[in-house]
Amino acid sequence: QVQLVESGGGLVQPGGSLRLSCAASGSIFAINAMGWYRQAPGKQRELVAVAISRGSPKYADSVQGRFTISRDNAKNTVWLQMNSLKTEDTAVYYCKIFLNSGSEYWGQGTQVTVSS
Image 1 (spheres, one colour):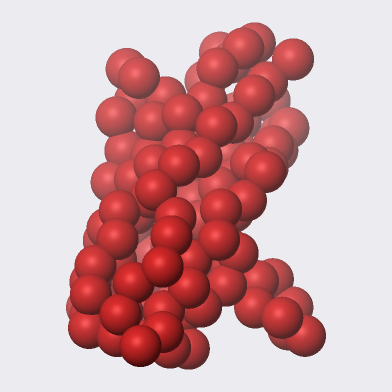
Image 2 (image 1 turned 90 degrees about the horizontal axis):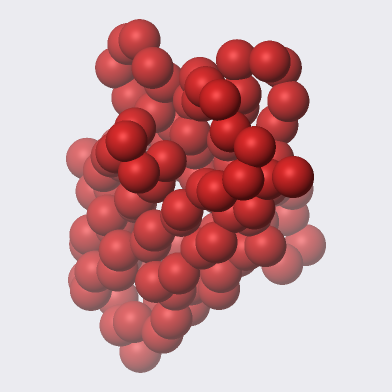
């Protein structure tokens, strides 16, 4: 059994910052990648950023230069630093991990609301 616990969402004004965190625990032997997705009302879930074991992080064009993903392999934790937030960044943000075994797991989601 694998559990992902997310935290850090909330309400912030445009131009502000938030930092999301996601800690994975349970039967985890090797994580290949850890990423963040988001889903706004009425829209499909989309990739925001992903940190892979070998290679550079990947970002959606809409967040490039504003968001930074980082991970701590020893702690099975991934963070998403979000700066210069815009109203269009409002969404539920989900953490996802990709194990070397091929299994994938989602977090429960955390709400991020950018509004004045």
